Image: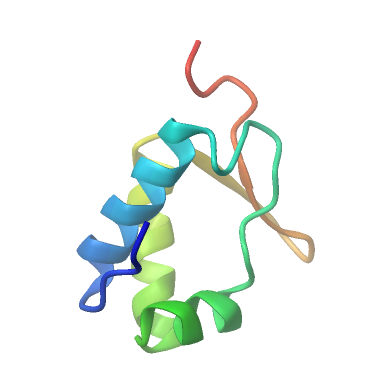
Length: 76
């Protein structure tokens, strides 16, 4: 799946599709903000906004000091 470039919405939509397709299964850790920033060619602050969208959609949960993980109950 090609990586879209653009704003936080495009990143959030792409990651949501990847989560729903099983590319990132429940319980898996997402790439770091720095990695996502490089992958999507956007600023780290833009990545943070996109992750907040995914949290609002109940797709991911942030664990302070550990990273962002796909929720265990996604797809149930």
